Length: 109
Image (cartoon, rainbow, N blue to C red):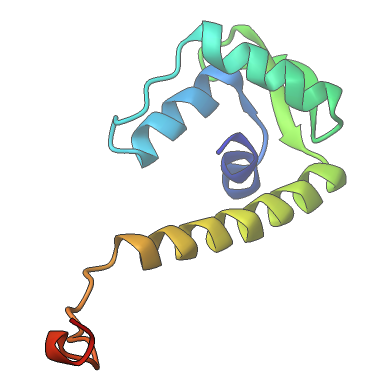
């Protein structure tokens, strides 16, 4: 979600990323500092995002995160994987049509 947010909106600070994820999820996901910042650090260590200091809209110093080329490739992999998993789950969750067995009980009972 973080990678996709950065792809769509460009560089953002952690608070902006968290608020955007909440907004897109219709507030079904709530990210606090204890969630978003460790995730950002992990993504940065993997080389999927980069960080630079800048000034926020409220004129405060903030660290802005942006997607790297490696992060864009990883996001594509994760998207393909998610689509495969979601398609599989959709098949399992789809209503099952009742199929009458081809044999009847008196043939085997």
